[in-house]
Image (cartoon, rainbow, N blue to C red; front, side, top):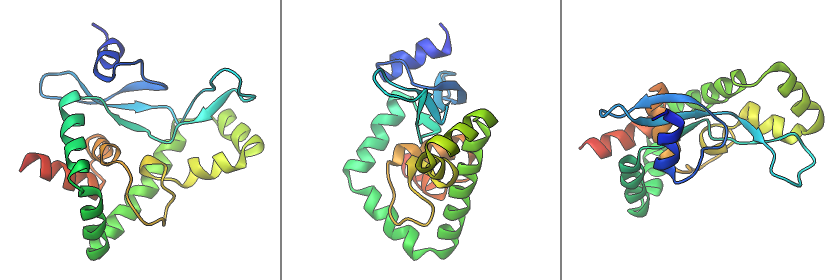
Length: 170
């Protein structure tokens, strides 16, 4: 079975903007995927594509379930507080956010970037500056522990994702 078919079963739908598998679980199945920062526009839109801010996507059903459990237990708020109290982690998070945005830009062609900058400047700002889950650099708050965990699994740079990993491992 092809990776994209496995991912479709994992998610219950075909992933939009699928580029490749970033990490695999111990069973060898896709765990985290890389998706394009832009995807074909839905019918009725007057643009060739639309932004898709999440670059790393968690696909492993077991991991999705466990991270959802953490979110339901209030871990977004708890990790926001932890981040606010730990200046080293906060600095590391800011660096991870910037490198996430830089990585996102590498997934686009020059033509795509020029089109976005010219025709949709607000999208260009999001693509250029937003971090995990589309949160703009310097913004307070976390969003979607799944995205932080996927980023950590794929790149190893996200302190919030590392904390999620530690919570799931401990």
